[in-house]
Amino acid sequence: MTMKERIELSRRAQGEWKNLSLKERARRLKPLGRLIHERADRISDVISETTGKTGVDALGSEVLPSSLAVGFYCRQAPRYLRPRPLKGGSVLFFNKQSSLYREPYGVIGIISPWNYPFAIPFQEVVMVLIAGNSCLLKVARQCVPVGEEIARLMETLDLPKGLFQLVNLPGAEAGNAFIESGMDKLFFTGSNPVGIELAIKAAERLMPLSLELGGNDAMIVLKGANLERAAAGACWAGFSNCGQSCGGVERIFVEEEVYEEFATLLRKKVTSLTQKPWNERSSDLGALTTKKQLETVKSHVADALAKGAVISARSGEEPQEDSLFYPATLLEQVKPGMITMDEETFGPVLALCRVKDGEEALKLANQSHLGLTGSIWTKNTRQARYYAARLEAGAITINDHLMSHGLAETPWGGYKQSSVGRSHGTPGLDEVTQSKVVIHDSLGHLPRQMWWYPHSTQVYRGLRDVMALVFGPKRLKGLIGTIRIFLRSFSSR
Image 1 (cartoon, rainbow, N blue to C red):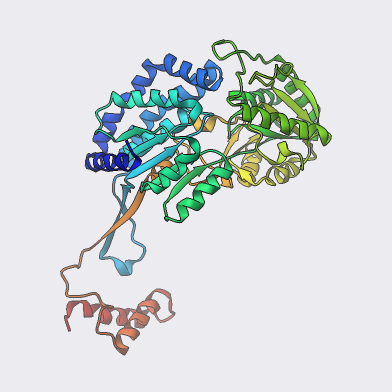
Image 2 (cartoon, rainbow, N blue to C red):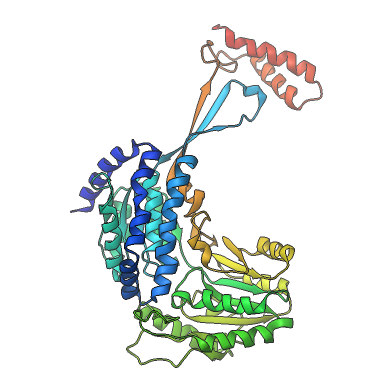
C-alpha cells in the first residue's frame, strides 16, 4: 500500500472515529490496559530481545507505565477535552459567551526511537486516538517486532479499519514520507540533528510537529541530602536501560562538603552492579542496543580521560569487540569542555563533578544547550524548591530521577534544544488537538453592534467614552457616553 493510499484510508477511518463521543472512544480503548497485563511477559521479552535491556527494565519502565496510562487517558480525556466555558474578560462584553473546544487534527504520524520502543509510541498512540485522530506509527528498524506487538493490541479493539496503521519504512525515508504525505501533524522522538532536519522540512509546509530530542541531565546533590538514597538514585537513573535514557542522569554535581562521602557510596554501588544477557532476570544492566551507540560511548569516555578525567569505578571489564555490553562507568575529575559534560552520552557513564556550593552546581548544570530533566537531592523542602525553580529543564524531581516519564499525568518535554511541545498529561492532549473558540451573542437579535457602520465622529467619541468608563478619571461622563453608543445597537440606521 502506498503512503497516499494509507493516508486516504486513515482519513476515512478518522472521519468515522471523530464523530463518536469522547466517552465512547474511551470505552473502546479501555481494554488495552487489561490486554497489556495479560500479555506483559511476552511484550517484555520482545522488548528485551530487540533492545538488549533487562526484563525488569522492560517491564518496569515500559510495560507497566503503559498499562497505567490507558486508565489515565480514558478517565481524563472525556473531562479535559469537552467544551469549556470561558470566563468573560470585561463587563462591557456581558453579552458575549465564549466556549473553548478541543478538536482533533486529523491524521497524525508518530516516528518513535529504539531506546523505549514500546512505552514512548504506545502512550502517544493512546493520546492521539482518544482525542479523535487517526494514527500512522513508524518504529525504529531494530524494534519492528515491538511495533508489531502494539499493532496486535490494536487489532483486538473495535476501531474503524485503518484508524491505526504500522508503517515499515527505512529511517532515512520515513521523515520525508510522513511530511510529504499530507498528514496533519508529526510526533518525532530521536536525535537533535534529525529533529532539526524534520523541523525545517515541516516548516516549508507549515506542518505542526512535536519533537522530543536529547538530554544531558543534571543531578544536584546538596549537603543536606540523604546520601545513601542519592547514591542509589544516581546509580539507577544513570544506568537504567544501560544509560540509554534521554531523561537519565548523566552529570552529577555534588557540594564539596559531602563529595567524598557521596563518591565513596556511589563507587561501591557501581562496582556491585551485574551485567548479563537480557533473558537473565537477575541482571542489573543489559547491553547497549546498537554498535553505533557503543562507539559513541567509548569515544566520550576516551575524550574525558584524555582531558584529565579518571575512571574511579566500573562494574566490570570492557567486553570483546563483537559485544554490545559496556560496563557501568563512573568518571571523576570531570570538567566543562569534555564531551560527556557538554553533550548527551546516552550510555552507562556517570560524570561526577565536585562544586563549591549549590549555586555553582546550578550554574554548571544550566550551561548545557539541553534541558530535558533534572533533579535536586536534599532533605530541606524550601531549598529543594529554590533550586528546582532555577534549574532549566522541563521536568524536575526532588530526591528521585527519571521516573516522571512513567507518570501519565506529568507532561514530558524539555527546555532549550531538548524538545518542541510536550507529550503526556493534559498538555499532551493539547498537543494532539486544536483549539477552537465559539462565541455566542445573547443580544444577537438586535440589528447591529454599536461599532458597526456607518462610522462618524459620534461613534469615535462614544468608543473613547467606553475607554474612559474603564480607565479614565471621569467615570460618570464615560458611563453616559457608553450608554449612548450602546443604544446604537437597537437602531438599524
